[in-house]
Length: 260
Image (cartoon, rainbow, N blue to C red; front, side, top):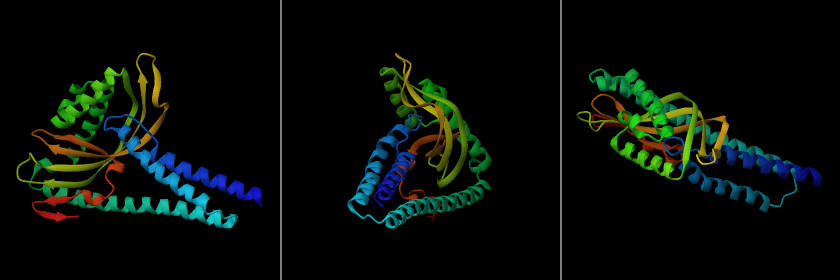
């Protein structure tokens, strides 16, 4: 019985650590500040570790109880992911419907052209980030985002660090919210970006990998904010998933008619 208890406790710890690592500890430096996500993810990891500690504090020796606890833990985690997926799906459908309605009278909201602008911005911004030359994507970013990325990549150059991005692939882009106002200068669109890439950082002096994995493609999700300028939609902000806890953050505000 003692061996069984030790085995179950080890398996429980392994599963908990798996969720922590897979959920929060992938630290990358791609355009959009994936590295900051890893930093904030650390606090999330700490909370999970605390939950694991509470499991040891129980001091129970019943293997059945431990198994039930493990199953409950997995189900709760899966349930949260399902709820988020459903809410995102609802936001996407509402946003697409609003965009289609707007496009009837306003060419700036043509959905197919929006998707093209989003894709162009995504790939060009990633390229500019890796090359540490924001001028390569200046026309695809707002002035504010351009300046922020320029500051970050110049600092990377000072530290002799270069973020390598290979096999970058935009899997999907889905609207989460939008705000339409008079004119075009204040229109806002939030997109959920799903993508994957081989993403790692090297020290240019030694050519050694100091962050990420050089041979592993990693999937990631981010929220990208776009604003309308004269000729296209351009990226204005990039948020990590854990930076927006409540999806009600994304509003659908069309000619003063609001939907949440």
